[in-house]
Image 1 (cartoon, rainbow, N blue to C red):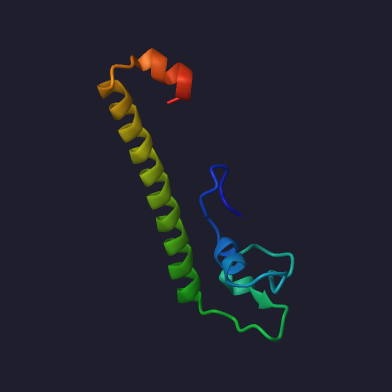
Image 2 (cartoon, one colour):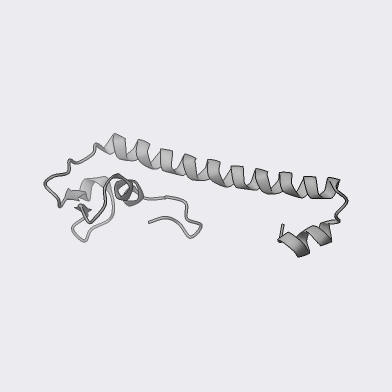
Length: 96
């Protein structure tokens, strides 16, 4: 499950991104690859490396999106300041 900030942090996050429905499980054990079982016989079990790489990509995508949002926010703030608004006015009007 994703951490409290929404960043993927577990093999389960990657697996859930592959297919809809409850197609995998861990037999009430720790959510690690060694315990992974496929519950839907129409789905294939990804390799451990695919899970590692897939989770890393989800994390990178999440981090890049967050950075992009922060950059856009900073750019908007700078543009508003360039137009003559004070930091207090910007914060009051837009919360940034």
